[in-house]
Length: 152
Image 1 (cartoon, rainbow, N blue to C red):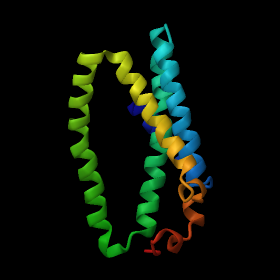
Image 2 (tube, helix red, strand yellow):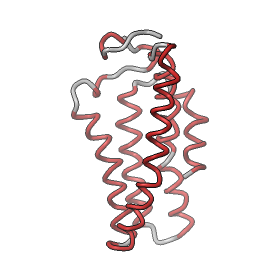
Image 3 (tube, rainbow, N blue to C red):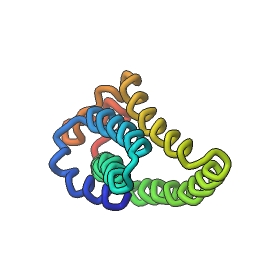
Image 4 (cartoon, rainbow, N blue to C red):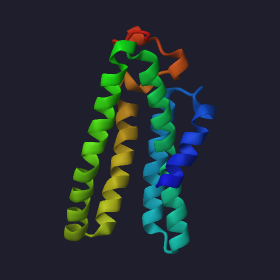
């Protein structure tokens, strides 16, 4: 997971010219299908590589959305917005781990991994289906007033 996110973070600057919609839809769709492939792989090294590949789009979008936040959140609010974002993520992690562990014990790891892949696919499909999200341009081309934001 860490390796995939690191690779994605390192490659994010080369992908920033693509629209946020394309990065999210294609990236999370790719991740969902790669999780399914990892689930069906019968060879452990292949499963590990596929699992790593699935996290690359997460690393890319983490960096791109951080740039978006820094570009469009007013300077006097950036500390609050960043701390809420990091705090929510940090608070969700142990809860998700606990629920994932319970689900794994109850239903088995195959179901948990399949559900996670469905979650990635849901994100891609949601962005594809939502009329406003479907056409979000690249961060540098974004008109913040279209989304209720203003340039920081």
